[in-house]
Length: 495
Image 1 (cartoon, rainbow, N blue to C red):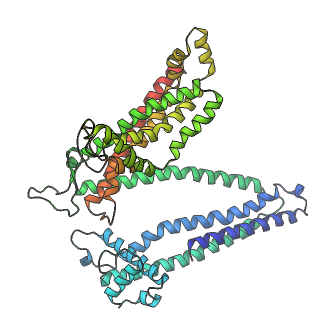
Image 2 (cartoon, helix red, strand yellow):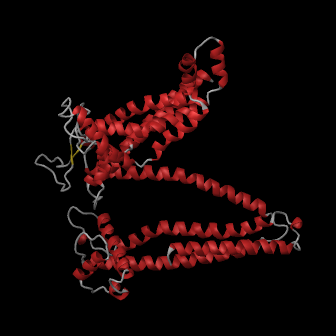
Image 3 (cartoon, rainbow, N blue to C red):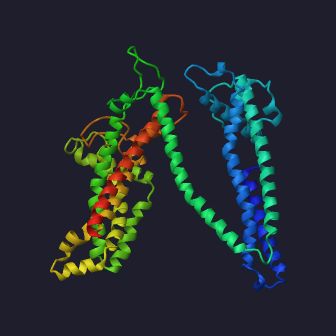
C-alpha cells in the first residue's frame, strides 16, 4: 500500500476516534459536560493522539530501517566477482536499487508484466532496454546476478511495505480502543493531552538538532573516506584544480586528478568580499535612513520595495548578471573602454550582482536593530548638545553594533553559499588571480559540478564534494565564533 494512502487511513481513524471519544465521554456524564473532568474536546483529542503518535512513529522507524535491512540481505546475494575494478560494493548496490526501481516503474508503466519482472531467466538485453524505455537510468547492460538481486530487492520491498501497512493499521486500531477506554467522566483527559502536546513540541524542536547532527556526520564520514583515497596535503596545499574522472596515478605515484581547494577558496572569498563591499555600505546607509530620517509614509513605501530584492530567485540574479551586468561592464572595462575585461563572466560581475542580492539582508536586519535602541539614549545625546548625525555615529550605531555584526555575518554566510550567481556570472575557471575582471569559480559551484550526472561515490572526484562542503562548514562556524566574540565584547560595554 502506498504511504500516502496509509497516512490517510491513520488520519481517518484518528478523526473517527475523536468523534466517538467525545460522544462517549459526554454519554458517561449523562450528556452534561459540567460533570466531566475536562472539556469534551480533550477526550476526543486523547483518542486521536493515541491513534496517530504510535502509528506514525512505527511508520517512520520502519521506513528508516527498511533500506538498511533489505540492502544488507540483498548484498549477500551478489558475488564478489561482480565488483569490477574501480568500482565498489556501494556502487554495485546503487545499480541494484536503480534496477529494482526500474522494474517497478516498468510494470507500473505497462512496459512489462509483473511475471516478466519476476522471471529470473529473462533476456538481459531485453530487460535493459525495457528499463530504459521506462525512463530508468541504466549505466550498462544488467548482468544476471544484478537482475536476481534487483528482483529480490523489489520483492522484499513490496513484502516489507505490506507488513508495514498491516502493522501500522493494527497499531492505529489498537490506539482507538486504548483511547476510548479513557473516555470516562473522571478521566483526566486534559492532563494527558497537555503532556502529550508538550512531548510533541519537544520532538519537533529536536528535529532541527538531529538534522544538524545528521548533516555534520554525513559530511564527516564522507570527508574521511575522501582523505583515505586522496592525500590531504594535496587537497589543502595544491594550487591546481583539475579533476580527472578517469582516475589513476602518474609515474611518481601521485593522483592524476588535481583537487586543490586553494583556487576555489580564493574565488569564494574574493567574490564574497566584493559582494559585501557593495551590500554592507548600501544596506547600512539604507537602514540608517529608514530608521532615523525617513518619515512614516516614506518608510512604508521604501522598506517593502527594498525587501522585494530578497524574494527574487537567485537564478534570476544570475541571468541579470549574465545578460545585463556583464555586457555593461564590458562596455566600460572591455576592449571598447579601458581594455581590462575580456568577457562578461568575471569576479566583478558576480560580486556586484551578489552584493545587490545581499542588500535587503543587511538593511532589514540592521533597521530592526537600530529601531530597538532605546529612545532615551538618543534623547540623552540630544540633551548634551549632539547633532543628529553625531548621535547616530557615537550613540546609536555603537549600541546597535552587535546586531549589525549579526546582519553582516548572515550576509557573509549567504554570499559564501551562493551558487547560481557564481555559475552564470563568474564562470567556471579555477585560478589564483588578483584581477577582478577575470573569470573564477567558487567552492559551491564545484560541489555542484562534481555531483552532476552519474557520480561514482567510490571515487575521490565525487567524494571531494563532501570535503569541500566540510571546509565551508568550518569557515562559516569560524565566522559565527568571531561574531559571537564581537557581540559579547560590546554587550559588556553597553549593558
